[in-house]
Amino acid sequence: MLTKEKQAQLQALVHNATKEELAWVNGYLSGLLGEGLTTASSNLAVGAPQKLTIAYGTETGNSKKLATDLVAIAKQKKLLTKLVSLDQYRLSDLAKEEYFVTVISTQGEGDPPPAAQKFYDHIHRSGFQLPQLKFSVLALGDTSYPLFCKAGEDVDSQLEKLGGKRIVPIQKCDLDYQADAERWFQTVLDQVFQAGQSNPVEQTKPTETVVKPAAKPAGKTIYQGDILTHFNLNDRGSKKETWHIEIAAEGLTYESGDSIGIVPKNDPVTVAAILSVTGIDGATEFAYKSVNSSFYELLDAKLNIANLSEKVLERIGAIIGQDLKGASLDLLGILQKFSIQSKETIEAILNVLIAQSPRLYTVSSSPAAQGEEVHITVARDIFWIGEEKKYGRCSDFLSKHQVGDQLSFFVQKNKRFKLPAQDKDVIMIGPGTGIAAFRGFLYEREAIGATGKNWLFFGEQHFATDFLYQTEIQNWFATGVLNKAELAFSRDQKEKIYVQHRIKEQGAELFQWLEAGAYVYICGKKDPMSTDVENALIEVIQIHGNKTEEAAKAYFNELKDNHRYHKDVY
Ligand SMILES: Cc1cc2nc3c(=O)[nH]c(=O)nc-3n(C[C@H](O)[C@H](O)[C@H](O)COP(=O)(O)OP(=O)(O)OC[C@H]3O[C@@H](n4cnc5c(N)ncnc54)[C@H](O)[C@@H]3O)c2cc1C
Ligand SMILES: NC(=O)c1ccc[n+]([C@@H]2O[C@H](COP(=O)([O-])OP(=O)(O)OC[C@H]3O[C@@H](n4cnc5c(N)ncnc54)[C@H](OP(=O)(O)O)[C@@H]3O)[C@@H](O)[C@H]2O)c1
Ligand SMILES: Cc1cc2nc3c(=O)[nH]c(=O)nc-3n(C[C@H](O)[C@H](O)[C@H](O)COP(=O)(O)O)c2cc1C
Image 1 (cartoon, protein in one colour):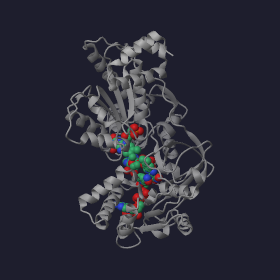
Image 2 (cartoon, rainbow, N blue to C red):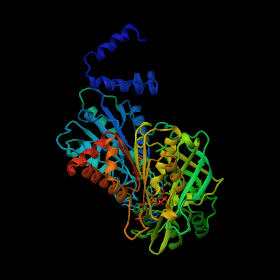
Image 3 (cartoon, rainbow, N blue to C red):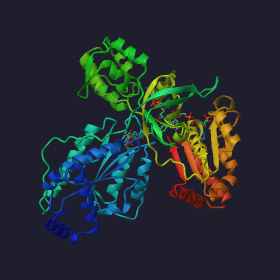
Image 4 (cartoon, helix red, strand yellow):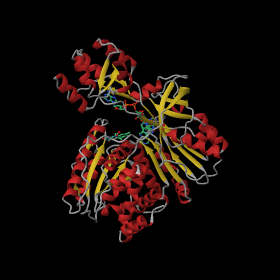
């Protein structure tokens, strides 16, 4: 409890405060509680302290983690700071913000993360201005994508168009973002505090200490799983390999619709070849970003040595004095081509490589049915460089595992891809590995005895070799878990038949399901599949709902707004 005297002081402080000021005080006090009230309150800035909002838009958690680190730094400087996810951000608050920092990644092909879509769409609507806003954008991306940090760039230019003033220019970060982000944030803070000094009300000056992130949040739980089952779902003669992998892990918690993240190891043959070409023993220690690791550890698991981005090639080129622009070379290729054996040169090269990143796989199981087991459905990624057949790193790594092997992974929650109440009807559209999510959903609905109807659309190349999970799907159909199943085998006839052809054929009944309140889910490849399927759905609504194209689109958008249309596409 407060003493009478303190109560009076508090009442005097809040008496004439606006609603917004009260909200800030509330946020500030919550922050103090997290940091230790006594120390913080003794440094509390009085008068008109700058208020900073840090809003993040994330898909795989990097922006959230980084934004949390930045908030900790700002709070160390006694800046009133609010942390919020863009999907929970009240859009009407934007006009009232003083300093607004957004940390946003790019997903898909230059798109904002789904959690930031509403914010992104809002700022791209015309008809309003944000003259008060002082903003800065920290954009996370990956230089191996053609549209590097595109979502961040869009937000940055759009906020300027709306009349906002940039605090400092946008910072675009690659996968090794931490140091760049912290340096950039220091300049943001410098600007914010400088503005505070020119303010008539005295403001606490930042201390001149080197900015270090506060202790990192616990982060994701890494599970150590045992592989129980591992087999190829495609039959002999198929052009594809799709691996069904069942993993058991003690204490595992997830929900159907989530994904798991796996960091692959590098190809052991390539690693052995690098050791041989360089003549350096695997146990030799190298300093990578100031931390010592053995050469073998770095090559085996820590670094991306296969798919080198233009930026990485450029940096290696600068180290070895060669023009590597446009070269389709991996680390081994470079070391071989230029006969590099000097330890110093190799250490410099290792330091411009990027850490191996996790790949996500939608779970194809349900904890209601499989308990502490998670299943995944992995297409071995095949591509060609000239005449040479190549494999994607993680899908190749996973395809080569065996029953009894151990595998580390984390759970990536996907709260936007969850089943509705058990009595609602669902329409699931999942060609190829898109079936993963719906195998999980069907196991879930079967286990909980859901009363809603289930309709599946599945497509693959050939009925004989590529009907993934054929027996389970047929069993669900036989037992009534699946009320309807539409199959599209694209290459069993001259003309391609895809799931959207089946959607159109079944248009009348599909529209009835929609009218009766069905939920629609789509999983699998983003382009062109999901775009084509969306167009087919709009066509069905137009024809069978007897609507204009515009009205059909509005109906479809309403499905989205009412959370009756969900996508897990990449
Ligand atoms: C939320 C989510 C869920 C997903 N669910 C599934 C799922 O259920 N099942 C599934 O199979 N996949 C799924 N994916 C895709 C999966 O995460 C991986 O992207 C996929 O397995 C390919 O990864 P990879 O490591 O095998 O390929 P990578 O090594 O990452 O290669 C990908 C591509 O990069 C290019 N590339 C790679 N190396 C080189 C090189 N040396 N030179 C030139 N180009 C190169 C090629 O075009 C290649 O196809 C999902 C993705 C997300 C984001
Ligand atoms: N969540 C995921 O689930 C997922 C996500 C991303 C990426 N992948 C990656 O994509 C690659 C292959 O994926 P996949 O095995 O799932 O199969 P896929 O390539 O998506 O093929 C599945 C089926 O969809 C058909 N298809 C092709 N274009 C289509 C379109 N525009 N509309 C509708 N259907 C279309 C294919 O036909 P044709 O082949 O005959 O044209 C095939 O019959 C893998 O390398 C995997 O890593 C999977
Ligand atoms: C499916 C997928 C698509 C991506 N597309 C892009 C892209 O188009 N441009 C880009 O710069 N980065 C792209 N990235 C890289 C992410 O932006 C990067 O990994 C970032 O650190 C993720 O941050 P987040 O965890 O906050 O979402 C993509 C990543 C994934 C998994």
